Image (tube, rainbow, N blue to C red; front, side):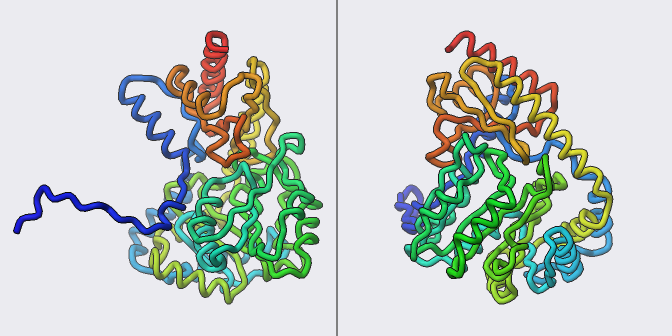
Length: 397
């Protein structure tokens, strides 16, 4: 009997209702659709460096492909890369890390996902920054945990208030997420803030996921990791990678540092989900860490320059006010003076002004009243975006 034309209801697992998304890709898709209709768009929505991957890294990948690095590798990552990552983290965080504590994954998100799957039981509480990277909340809820937001306040330059964090810790708290430099605000946690966070945790069996993916893009001072503090070594999972630092977003390669017994479980999750990270990209990552680091400093310097220019420009536009970020490549603009809510304003700027930005609510409920602009575009296009926003406000505010 033919089943052509029969309609069967798609019955999804209930947990799919708890799964969120990353709005940047949705806005990018809308912007691309407008471009296909002939509209000119300035892209300030997507969070990726606009620079090319440094040539030495590309050359290393090509050489790896020609040398046969096209097959399965160990689920935890190639031994050479794990050793180099361990040495790099040991040097930059001032602790001793072994290759057995390194898990290489395709991008940064798997470390977030695997952390939730490995550690969070139904009803466990996870404290996370809000506004913050939306995948935190999505993965907490997908794993059955309770997402507990800690408000990042503009008057503190969006750096987490440790007293606010302390007030949220309960007997159900299983994990605390830190992100510095932070997406979307560009805030940075001071060493004292991080030390006080460790003091709040005390002897509790609470784990920390320290997302340090932007650590090489901090504008002032040296980044400091909670992984470096006495007593926090076995309770910290460090997330880092190559996407932002080396303009390798499309290569999909990141890593986590954690106690070796947890690394073994993370590796099993890799085996069950991805098998392994692509072998030739791991050889490119070896070159990224071993090779010339000057492109990283050039990108960092350029992002700081662009941020200052764009913040100065926004602060001259009626209805907008903005603080200078301390790292990453985002500015988080206060739009209270416009009288608009975040999502309608972001939509209007895209549709009417041709500027793609993200609503602050894309980063959680406490993002209302803000827009995030990525400065991962040229100075010329950032000037163009400011001019378009200024023209739009003259007509619409």
